[in-house]
Length: 308
Ligand SMILES: Nc1ncnc2c1ncn2[C@@H]1O[C@H](COP(=O)(O)OP(=O)(O)OP(=O)(O)O)[C@@H](O)[C@H]1O
Image (cartoon, rainbow, N blue to C red):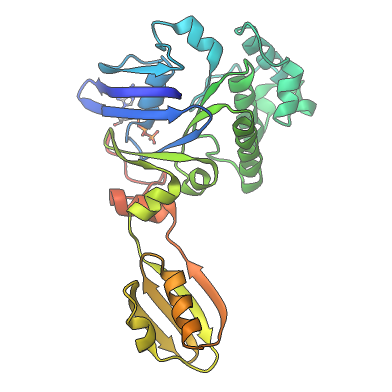
């Protein structure tokens, strides 16, 4: 069963078309990454999904419910952590989780929710006094306090240091282990590659590509490189004869082979067959970031020029 279904969503703000026909299915228990450059329509899409915005056209369902029509029921099953959440900065971590807990019929105990995100010892600290990483973890505690079956996370780790990012990733792993469905908006391709089962690449308000990170990388059909040292030298013609190989560079004993498809296997089979002794072999595969650039012709990062 699918946890989230979006069908032909459209949203225009005055003269700006933010979402122009988004259809997307998120299977229950999976983690879907929503990626795209600034202004691609990611936040608008998740706000519509959370029932915070009304689409001009199209429909969305969360566990079979309409986020606006069935607002009360959706609130009990959907947790939302949105960009720039406006939390009351003078309240303590414990007061905030207690306040949010009161919105749900059932859920985690406030102290347990803080423990779950590693904030047990910061219960009495005011929100404004928490570090960026702690605030982020608190916003996740607020999103999961009602034990939701579906969670929306927008820009989860933006501005966090590497250690804090990893801690937050661990929390998302925990959601996955509990079978929670997650829709995750991110600019960080390494994060998406690490956490997501599926990725939807949004470009100018439309879904440009969907699939697992590996599928999207494969679809971009980018070259990869195999590097190794040939102990007793190499006749480059051996490898140039392989259909997977596009280019072979030999410098002394060092060899770099560029190509596509199952390059690593083709090269290693050929070398073994011809008795070439190899050391220090490594493979450079294209990343999701490379694929993103190839598929949109643009950068995914927050520094990208924005059309506003
Ligand atoms: N409330 C609003 N009023 C007018 N225009 C808006 C509003 N919200 C978003 N937009 C515009 O709609 C387009 C899509 O914005 P949206 O925030 O959905 O994109 P995004 O992919 O989440 O971008 P970012 O990565 O910068 O957060 C942008 O051109 C943006 O300027």
